[in-house]
Length: 251
Image (cartoon, rainbow, N blue to C red; front, side, top):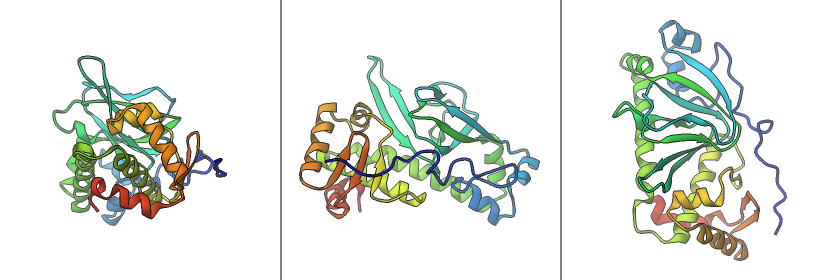
């Protein structure tokens, strides 16, 4: 079955490249809290909080590497990023995928070094925040401090979600529903997804074999849960997928 929908490109992306020297990007993880406290981007600069637009990072390029000193967190403006750890035997575990509006690097707060690699999956752009400066500012801005706590809590939730003894179909359904909901909060169509990650990368994240991921996606397509065309996915029966993913998502 061919999926007739457009890819999510930079041109379609309502998030990428909409900030400037004064205005935050619309999806900036800290913009709402900062603006409520009366600080725009220029004010943060005056308070020695360095906010830089960086990128593009091309597909396969590292945003940061494991064991690098932790100096900054990265708010994704456009593109998709994966975080990866590699064990002593060279096996890759994909810890997570990050889309526009989400923050990469929070798991480095302790021990003050990045515990994983962050690698662009496609052309990706970021706002880079000096973490020591923004952390100090957060002590003076309760709203910003609360936002930091929320982001850290979300990071912990992402890390533990797949720890349970869940079936392969449950994991795959949860992956699709979670990704769709995250895109929806940023203004993308809730039922249509462009998977910037490969089947192997999805498998490494869900702790499944790549052939299992391909088989389950094929089964979801055959049963009418999704339409699928290579990396383009349409959720045809999101309620059924959500029911299947309930135990993984915890809701």
